[in-house]
Amino acid sequence: MQKTKILILLSVLLSMSFVSSHDFYLSTTTVKWVPEKQQLQLTSRFFIDDIEAYMQEKQNSKVVFSPDSHPDETDAFIEAFFNDNLTIRVNDISQKTSYLGREYQDDLLVIYAEISSLTLEFRRLELASTFLLDFIENQQNIFHVQTPTKKKSFLLKNKAYSLEFELK
Image (tube, rainbow, N blue to C red):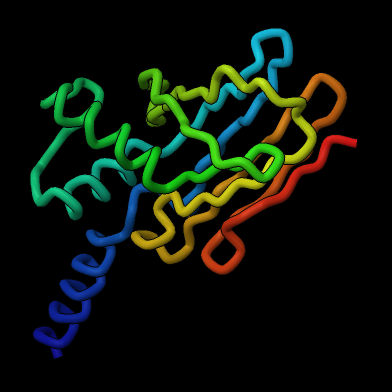
């Protein structure tokens, strides 16, 4: 009887040790159209522990963020992660995103990027995001699209990972 109680207690403790540090798997990205600069400005926020775990799985290396244990390796990984998991089309034309950098805010990784020199009139945005969807089953990505005249938010997840925004 005593051994059974100990085994149950051990199994409960072991299962609790594999529980993640947060209950929600969420990222947020703001896509802001700035007409006077002819650019889209992007700001994304991810939980640091999710990105560290993702990087460890993909590169099979133990990397620590905040403070950075390998800043150059981390920057290269984050830039590739961002560009590989986000596609943007403006008025049906594919756009290249330029990674600007990253910083840490508490337990969040904040990534900055832009699409500049947009010479066309912004009418329609199509976006697909697969941020962490292949890694975390319950991952959800919220996108806020802002223009000087319109704001709209979208919830993207596994089977619904794209959005369309029209400026009318």
